[in-house]
Each structure stands twice: as structure tokens, then as C-alpha cells.
Image (cartoon, rainbow over all chains, first blue to last red; front, side, top):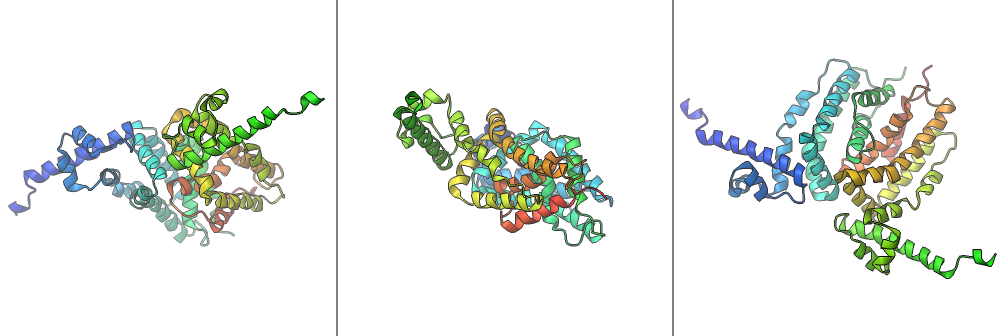
Length: 198
Length: 198
């Protein structure tokens, strides 16, 4: 079994990978997507740029991996207590905290801006990051629908967007504050019309 | 009374102003906000750059005026037939057509991206363009609320965002198609929970 123990080089690789992700996220938040370079990421991470090129073909690929390293965490972050409103409020309040954290928000904004600007990058961003995030909500709504909390005829994808769209608009376009009170009102108002008709 | 007739120079000014707006909107859609210059706008409009500087202090100011020249048109575009769902669908279907028109969509996207990137610009963008657009919906919702179509306790601002947020997210982040069927479903689902409780 000894040969199944990760050799030192694997642990070093893992350390480098983490350092590259951290550097990419920090840098894109500081300089924006257009000015982000593989060289800059390498310098910040303390690795040679060949190390990055060995694993990723482009800065977009590095960034998408950096953002999605915790995508399984998304799914684990959505509780199912049987109370849909409470569960959505719980997750959205956590998102309010996350978006108030500049270290998290700045790189995410930089990537969103780059995606809004560039349809090709956007398609990868949607596929790898946004759509999996949306699907976590859709699945939770579908579970509620199967238990009869939500009407059988409700389009749960559109219902999900009624919660996530306003949050995204306030954040990206700065049309309003993101507070616990706001997400609570949003969830209550969005869910009010989804109950099965008597 | 003769001296109240606009002299030729006023008509020329008005022509120049329109040409500058058209040039600014076309150019920002082509090159993006960062690469837009007063010189570029002047050249495209066929005016001297001093003409632009005489009226506007910056490219942001030109663009915001260009975008808001028809803001009164927004308000006129929202009908009140007494049927809130029908009226919202009417306006949102018109928006679907508008956002499918590259000539309109591209400059608007460029400005949205610039605003997402830059908090100072964003504040002006929100105040001059986005908030007046949102308020047209809020007012229409409030009229429905006063007539008892919408519950007295409903936050009509948040209700408006449940319709506009998902549209904006699909457009900017490209998370889904903007179709008549989509906006119809969205309006029906958003309004379903707003009726006064029996």
C-alpha cells in the first residue's frame, strides 16, 4: 500500500495549484479580466509560468477552475429542512455576507463583467459556474414541488430566477442594497404565488 | 415675435446634438466604453471636438444624455389598460424585441459593463437611466395596488424587481433566452402571489 501514499511531488503540486487559484482570484479582482496575465498569476503565486501552462491553456481556464474548485460546496450549502422559504433565506443571507466580502466579490464581479463583454467567455462561465449555481436552487424547488409545497404547473426554473435575478441585478448594476431584509422579502414575495391552487 | 423663431444656428445645434448622440451610441457598441473617446465621437458625428466639450464635460456625460434623450418615452411606453398582467407583458415583449436589436443592445450592454466595473459611473447610470426605468414599473404596480389588484402589504419595488431582475440577468449574463413566452411566464408567476389575500 505504500505506493498509494501521495509522493511529496503530488503534495507540492496541490500546494502550487492552490497558490495559483488564490493568485488568479486576487489579481483579477485587483486589475480586472482584461489586464490579467498568466505571467502576473505566476509571479503572484510564486511559480514559473510554465507550471501554469502545463495545467491550463489560458487565463480563462485558470479562472474558471479557480472559481469552480468549490462548486460541490454550492450543493452542500443548500439545506433541505422541509421549509423551502427558510432554506432559501438561509442560503441567500449567506450570499449577502459573501457579496459584502470584497475578497470574494471583486473577482466574481471581474469575471461577470468579462462575461457580459464577451459571449464566448460567457458561455463557459454560464456552463461551469452560473448554471450549476442556478441548478442548486432549481433542485431544491423541485423537491418542494414533488412534496406538493409548490404547484405542479409551476416552472421552477423561472421561479428560481425570480429570486436570483433580482439579487444579481442589485449586485451587478448596483440598483439597491443587498440585505437580509431584502432577501427575506424577495423569498416571501416570490414563493407567495407558487403554492398549489386550492 | 420674430425673435422667438429659432434661428438657423439653433436648428444646426439640434442637428449636431443628434449626430453626437447617434455617434456616441454606435461607437460605444462597437469599441466598448473604455476605448470610447470624445475625439472618436466628434469624428463619427462630423463635428469638431470643441463642439462636444462645449456641451459636455466627459464621454460619460455624452453617453448618459444620449441614452436618456428618450426617457420620457419610457413612461409613455407603459400602458394602463386596467389589466396589470397584460400591460407588463406588452412592455416586456417590446423589450424582448429591443434587446434583440443589436443596434440598441450593444451600446446598452457597453454602458452596463462599464457601470458594473466602475462604481462612480454606475451611480450616475442608476440615477439617470436605470432607476427612472424601474420607477415606470413601480408606478404601474402602485396604480394596481391602489385599485386593490395587488395586496396593500406588497412591496411593489421588490415585486418590480421580480420581473426586471430575471430579464436583466438573462440578458447580461446570458443565462437564458429572452422570448415572449419567457416574459409571459415570468409575469404570470410574479403576479400570482401579489393578489390581496381573501
